[in-house]
Image (tube, rainbow, N blue to C red):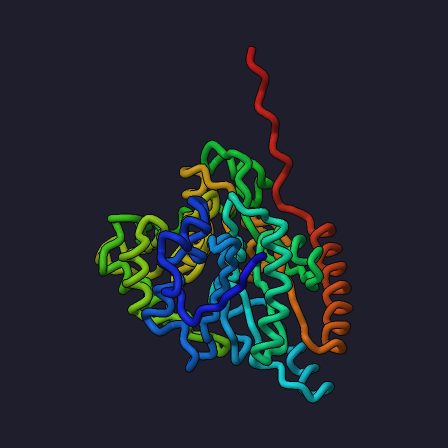
Length: 388
């Protein structure tokens, strides 16, 4: 028999037992250090609409699976948009949509495991128990629903098989088939686009801008402070911006997980002053672009800091996939490809459940048709010449 429990802090677990279930190649944002830093610096707390309710599964008193989970009082910082579901629930059904439960990495629209299952456990049994457990949690806690956000496709399918509604989304990811260098990547573009990217890369040096990539022990306090200021400037720049993170989080996570952090820093070549930067995460075979900002608007700064330097690093490090974040069809012209993302949902009210299932089926069909019709700017990669 499998026992499910919930915890109001990630510190209901030890770092070693949580990360042992996450596994060596887990994305940074599902590791204990990341989730704990969000709580300890106050970025995740009930007053901001995030109440930790982390989930564990035990069998024969042995911990076999865990999941990061939160009771939400709003839909901010999730990136799987359900505002129309909330309006339908409250206006048409006269039922409160909030609070709800999400199983996710806060503020992170990036793909990764959501139920972290022991390699020695029966995965099918654990996933089935997890799906039943979500239904029990929302019933006992008086919640409207539970939402598993940005799981890997396999996990989403397993949850669908267990009865959850499966939703598709769309992002643009870069794939590495084994490029030798950046020029090898550029060879897949038409001559016009290839020359455009070369001009965009060359323009930084012509403007007097230089770029450095920092990770591990190279990440110094000045770079962390600059990156926080860039993040904050981006939040303030747009009416939809939300400041989810604080300065303390940036410093704590760079101290605790420096090997998983990559800061791309653009400096003025003359003064050495930071003028822009990107905050990325390294995990397993993926690079995740998370935050970006600048103190000066310079032509092509964004493309170089957020895209081209990340692609160069993926090629250099042999990383398979670069997820630069949510949205942005402008990424297509720079070699990113439309990629389907996933989520899974439990809705307590039967009318809401039927409406959502009908909606996500139609939405998935439209997304798959869009992906099928999208024309890649990349030419097929030429096979290597046979040895003589």
